[in-house]
Image (tube, rainbow, N blue to C red):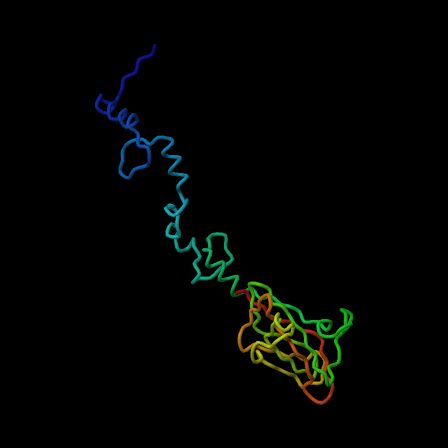
Length: 221
C-alpha cells in the first residue's frame, strides 16, 4: 500500500472537516462552511421567485434593460420592462374599422364603387370593439358632408337616441372622386353594449354627393 505525507497540520484538517460536518443549510454571507446540496438548490430555486426574488430590474445594467422612459428598440442585447412593452403597444397600435357603401345603402355590395348622396341623409351605426376608443374617421367621395354622433339603443322605448352633441362634422366641396374628408372627433368615443357610433352622410352643396367608403380610427385604451 502506498503511503502519503499530509501537507496540512492536524488543526487545519480538523477545521476543514468541521466545515463539512457543520455545513450550512443555506448560503450565508461571510460563512466559511460548506453548504448542503439542498441549501444550494433552494437558493437557486428562490432566484427571481415571488416577492422576495433576488433578480429584479436593479439586477440589470442600464444597457441591458429598456425602461418605459427610453422606449422599445430593436436589439437582442437588452430586456424591456412590461410597462415599456405596454406603452409601445398603446402608442403605436391603431386599428381601422371600415365604412363601406353597403353599411349605408341597402342592396349595395362590395362590387359597388359607391353611391350618390342626394337630398336624403344616409346613416349607419358602428360598434366600437371592447378595449378600443374611436378618435376620428376618414371618408372618400365628392361634395360630401360627414357627421359623427354618439348614440344608443333605448331599451325602454325601443328607439335609438343621440347621447349628446355631435363628435364633429367635416366636408369636402370638391367635385373630384376620391376627395378626402378627415374628421378628428371633439372627444374620444368608447361605446358599450348599448352605445355605438352613428355616422351620417349628406351632400355639402346643392349637387348630389358621392360616397366611396372610408374608415374609423381605433386606438387601444
